[in-house]
Image 1 (cartoon, rainbow, N blue to C red):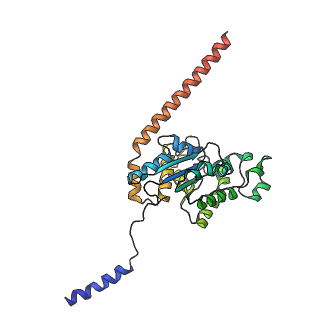
Image 2 (tube, rainbow, N blue to C red):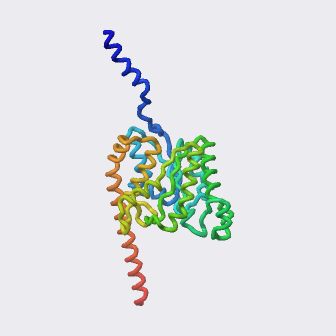
Image 3 (cartoon, rainbow, N blue to C red):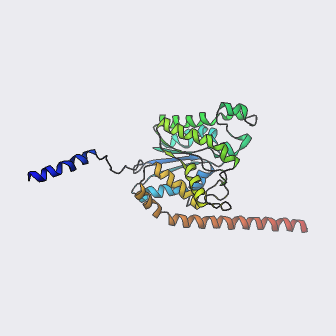
Length: 286
């Protein structure tokens, strides 16, 4: 008996030295609201049945968490416009969480874009209204500060790619914007979904230069892009590998619905174009 006790001592001592390997909990709780603030990528993330916003909500539900989405994506919006409507579209809805997806249009809009900082505002080529848009650093910091002051927990999303050619001028321009987002997330101690890094890794791994792997047009998501965005957000919210697998298993019906919706939209667009062409031809024949 005494011998057995002595043999167990090293085992017990080793157990005390092992770190706590308990499963981290998913940050979002049942019944909470998540606001999704962003541009057309986020608008599509809600508008399409297979958009990343809907995949995030479905993925949480697959893990026993029923959360409510507060869609707040508007096509074409930049950081100054998101800041201006933050209270109306997000804070007034009293969410517990807010994901922030912003940066593509700040860069992509060129002269009508938002400079990263004051130095860029002075040295860049912008239109005469640039001063009214402020700077990206100031706008994003204000959005995060105001959200936290209102008791809303932000989740930072780095901006995705602008063209799937990773050597494009636009991807080079957006790099310092994303570097700032990473730094700010660390400073403010908020979750970060580094989507840009995830997108770059996936595009490099696929190695299909002439194929749109994650987007339909170089910017807006296709099915695979939406899924990758959703994975990034869910990881930032604390889902582990097993929970992500459960989330992904819930997505096929949404993917099928998204493909069907896209087909119907394409057919409607083609029909409208044909009708317009026929009308123009009829007018010329008179």
